Length: 366
Figure: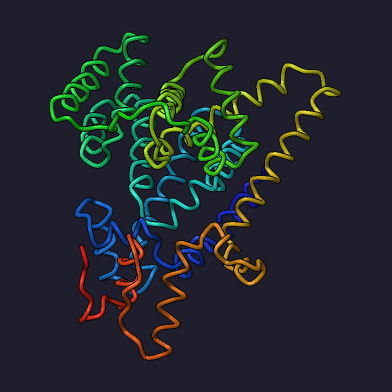
């Protein structure tokens, strides 16, 4: 990939992100965070709203962290690939991941965690150890699921005999146990194992996820295991094991697996180089097919709103839970109605964002 092509894609990506953040109504998860949480995501949402009105305001910090993640990912890619064109390709694949695009356009904790992980790995690769404890401390307080990260770093430190890394990661793991923080583990075998594959397919796009799974397995058996691999593989293994007994929240694991794009491209390049030119063609064709599906997934996300006017039953739309309160609030305001009593769950908070509250004569019957 040439530099001018990469820059052109960046421009299109920026336009798409601002379009999505400005036009997509508040999601149930965002509304719940906005009104019911006091964490760092909620704080950024309220700060952003003070700077800019509307949907863009509550998501402006997500956009910032999303673009920061892309910049850090590019810098990290430069350390893994000698040729700059491969860094361009890896970064393009990374920012086109449906999981990265949606995390950038909707306020969530994953897009804050992602640049911290990338910065940690980048600083470690540059041998700037002094900054690593501060990143670990930030992850410890921001993301309860970062216990995955500390387990991965501890495993890497032990295997590669890095005493400082082992000591710090072990200390944070002990703190997790002492404070009873981290991912809740419980339940009984309940059939969520197949569900996690669907969630990962939505983060990577289906074909790219299968290659991610293959790349992780291949590196496990025969390739060099870097810190990137330990982080991504640990997150994958944890999510698969937990899905046997309980429902898994993909936002807990997505920041740790998406960084594996660098490893996936490196495995692909190695597979192509060791083969004769006549046998390289099928690999390149497969690459184009995978990228085509990835681009298709991105286009569906960007132009998802138009599907409401195409499908007969809007409730079948994947973003129906986001748009239903928005359309309802719009309809109520057109009729001069400013209250509504039939909302349930997080839909109440979504309507509240559009200034549609409970009616004053509403009483809860127990």
